[in-house]
Amino acid sequence: MQPVESHYFLIVGAALFSIGLAVVLLKRHAIVVLMGIELMLNAVNINLVAFSQYDPDRIQGQMLALFVMVVAAAESAVALAIVLQVYRHFRSVQVDDLNELQQ
Amino acid sequence: MVQLAFYGFSALTLLGAVAVLLTRNVMYAAFSLLLTLLGVAGLFVLASADFLAVAQLMIYVGGVLVLVIFGVMLTHKPDSRTNGGSQTPNRIPVLNRSNAFGGWAVGFLVAGGLFVAFYTLIARSSFALLTRPVGWESTVNAVGRQLMTEYIVPFEIIGILLLAALVGTTYLASVKKA
Image (cartoon, rainbow over all chains, first blue to last red; front, side):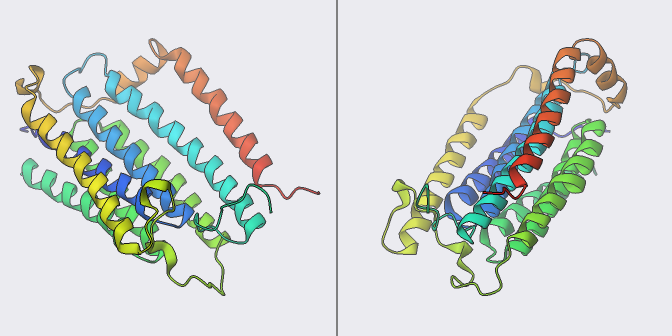
């Protein structure tokens, strides 16, 4: 089974990170902004796994990717709770409407 | 054959991400994110990280995505005065243009410039290890061994972090009696 060159993994990771950054910059819905952050974390995971291919004994890249995954899950749970509170407070989750600290 | 699978999973990943970027519907964005996460799981398998692929499916597809869809449903507003307004840019100072087109242009400029910078960096660099041929092997044994020996402290810390996130999320999402 011939492995794929790691350059391609890195390029896919770079493209995914750029698209995630564009989602975070351009979208207005708070949950879609969260999805952009998840895309960027996935791009980082692809890079870590691609480099971990050359470290088969102590797979440090894969371990770090595992921890990134768990932290991302915790982060998305907390962020969605904050989004719920923001929705209760402002009756909106469009980040353009959230221009005051108190209402 | 492996090359073909790699290109297929890459296309799935990138097309899902582009669909998240371009769609106006938040629900469609969530399902496009599902496509992207599945493609990333396939890429993990091709990079000989089978345990991580299964973890990706369970954590992201089974956990995060369900959470995101719950969030979309709980924050849905029937009488939306900004109809389909997920398309106009955020009002951060860089993007503060009068029309929506300027915001899109600046956003694409930032993201595209970042991608061009990454691409030239990857194309110019010559990693000494990357030309070494490696075979495909399962990493479940190695992951279990590493988690119980070298990474035992981060493993316990991540458990405490998950507990704290769980308790904090329940507290944050609860309705406070003001």
